Length: 440
Image 1 (cartoon, rainbow, N blue to C red):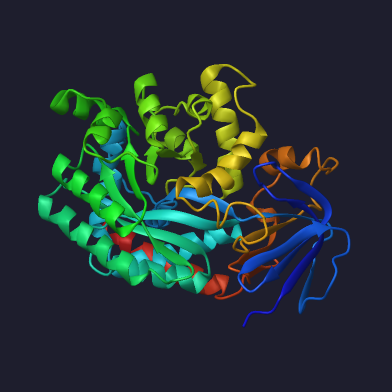
Image 2: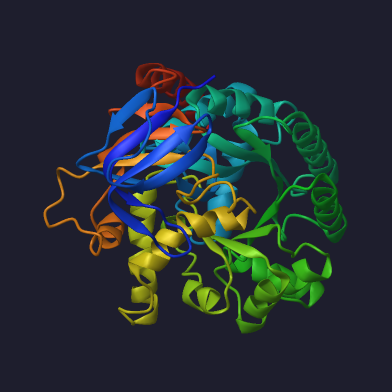
């Protein structure tokens, strides 16, 4: 039985629907859930008292789309001919990496990337793994690592037919097996995943959508990230990407479309009317030079937009800042999007993408206790209820994360992992990356 925990004396930013902010606030945790929130001195006692004076208390941040194995390429010099477009990035970088991955690499990268996210304030992520030579058992290997770190994870194998149809069927089988296995796991859940519409046919796409519905799990697919996706569908099917996904039955309230950079007004209407959501990855889109997703138009239509990192930069505060600025640059309008909208993407709207808004994404009684404490000693200007949201997007970074609670358990304390040492994580990851770089 977990101790009851009282976090008191902080500036509580709940990120609830009303944007409630509580100065000198407290949050009481009983077991794995938030039991009470309020201001001032709480009535009653708790077994553990956490002094949050001088801290912001906020919900754990939601990473709506990632690739854990991407961390193994950090800093690598692959000595390849520089790619000129997104398709060449896939062909020269990521697909060779995918094919070189082993189960040990999957586990090592999951350990390192999830630790990085947790230390930086992310308490939930949705990950898709893509290793055609390490399909069976890959999700178990990843889950073992994420549980060891103590982060909340939603995992899937990313199906593709780019090599052969059999490969996608094996991926589907792995997703089904894992979804059934982890049904009662408190930290780990399952997701169905397709790589992209230009690497899968109609039959497997429709089957994956139907299977996800039968299993009661979300489904995700990379959608018009680069122009290759759009051009492929127009040439082969005479349809734009989202139009094709709609025809094969892939859109719906539990569908998360990653990227959606090259989508038009009609496609946005289809996404909105179907209740599908979007995982926005601004820093990755800039890195790969694919363009800027029309997120302001998505928000106008009421589409839930979450914020992801696509396996590149795991600090959610950096991703928030990028999301704030890239749309102003792309539209030439410095007021097109604000800090409040960005913070919602990283919290409650990110949870909505996966149907988890009643469990995580905000600090409210009855929700799971996924909570982050930020040290405010380094901020240069006054911190008030009116300025705190602006500070969260413009000032703070992962370095300011003092403590993290997941499922009511303190898993980061004084900026360090609790369940496993930072040194062990680094050692395992570095050894795996060295082997991978040698192969490549």
